[in-house]
Image 1 (cartoon, rainbow, N blue to C red):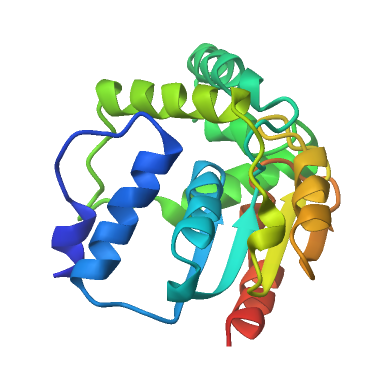
Image 2 (cartoon, rainbow, N blue to C red; image 1 turned 180 degrees about the vertical axis):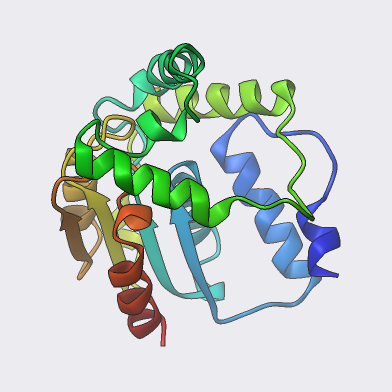
Length: 213
């Protein structure tokens, strides 16, 4: 059943709010409560909306490599993404080398290790459709340019995580989230970028399991 959910079909939404509405429709149908949510990057945008739209359903949240609506530099995500996809093609590398990891010897070794960990020869995910990819970029653009949310309304425990050099969703947005969400915990991994939780996966997973207990 889980596999069937992961291969769901339908029209990709073009706003973060609509994506959150889809998640809430899903959890409502399954009658899920006391949910612990982890949101990475765009997923972190959606997670914030979930906490604001239906706070009664969620008990803890991790926001990784993400930022609030109207956050600094988020309007550059489309440019950076397209540039790094083209850079990957020129260098014959998976774009995640550049999108998620710093271009340093340690960062690129972490990228190779990450790509090797997620590589599968069977039961592979279907590649994202171009229409869905473009819808995501449009949603991010709207998020980057709209008014800020009142994050002080969030009252559950939140852990904000990022690398110290996130090019996609600049790291200052993580500091901003931690400052605006009451009682939020903040971790900034050194010499890491947007994919800090993948670069420091062992430390992150151990701490995430402890936090989410």
